[in-house]
Image (cartoon, rainbow over all chains, first blue to last red):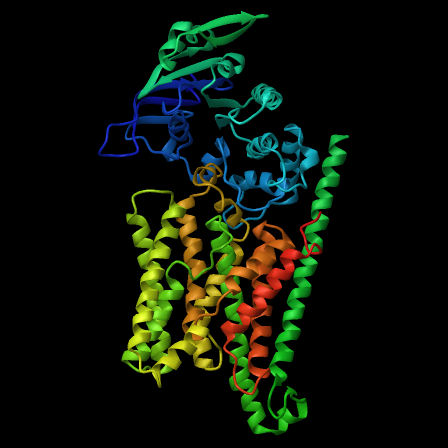
Length: 258
Length: 345
């Protein structure tokens, strides 16, 4: 049997060794080519889980494997070619142009002293086209809107050509039209073969695009499985501590509170 | 259609890069011309350029040009390049346009070392240089160790905080030393050192700092694109296949060593490391592939011009630090309010 793309086995993690762990006995695996949502309230440890998957944080106990191999056994560049990250917010202190910024996504393919070549610029520009912001390539990243900036980060991740794309609350600061646009792009990306793991605190996002959902509450995973089976009124009410109802509008599920 | 626009965008970008590379080439040529002119420029036998025949006939002129002016010029070049390149690296890594290479305890450490030596060992030039260099590195080491012990904040915040604290400690130390120094002999020497200058440069001094300067600058130059990646957040840089902590430390050391070496022989020369990187970014854009070499060249040119003015304007020397602050700030203000130089594409 083909190993899962990413698997967590009995993973335990915390930031402070003298305190209790934040995440305990995490157990789940991602299949290749799926969109998976990590759904949970603020402070449940969604971002922490994402950074464990990135290899940035090291588990106290347990094992995280990428394509069957321990994630720690990958070299820095090799891992960079496999996994890309779109953080929730990124501090942008200087006026890069959009193209220069997206070009940074080619870093894992270059040796430490290497410079991007015209071929890399082509890939970066194509990534901008896929993200639908090619006409902005010459603009400064400080001048564009928040929604466009999120698309620039997506384009940088595309230029990285990863197998697994991690997104941390990708829709948190977006208005409705940008939210819709981003979700479309994520779905297109999946169709071209990239696996996606995203965190969100909005059940609608999980319901709209993910096939698998990992429900989290404080200290770990509550349950994981197919989105339609997992996101029940009972489960959602339990993690958010608010009575919730799921209604269906024109065949699409929506969560409302009562 | 899309492939056509891709090609045109890539071509446009390439054309822009080419035009900036031409500017870099012109700057390099300008630097060489400036070096030659500066070598002949001075106040002997009268203010102005020395003639070629005179140089060949006059033993004193020959010695003046090749034993005094040449090492001094080369040190000015090293000073400008090191401080300005170091400043750019610091500003990128700290995501803060207001830092310069001396701020991690290096400048104040060097000042303390020099003052200590002047007061207690009424030091020879070599001793003062050695003590300044040693305390510059001690300042850096202390800042780094302290940053590791601070229990909150990100890596950048911790380094900034500890740099500020260590610099304050050393500058208090300098204050005490100035207070106890002999006001007739030692105090002027300390003050002069703190204003910076290249009047005491000899071949020995220049050669003593050369290895650190060359090693550091070559290293930074080779890493010039990578610096962009390391300017990003920790997690992002990591996701792009970098080892942010290790690589940043390496770059910091490579940026500090040349700066510390230069400061140890020239004293404190302010504003070069702060302003030249800003000017470089303004003309060449943020991408460090271009802005780092640009900062090196501009810094070198700026330091040489300032030093030329220092030694020719008046019969006595003007301390270099005064002119770099004055000119640097003026140029900076002009650049900020002018609309001509902008990264337009």
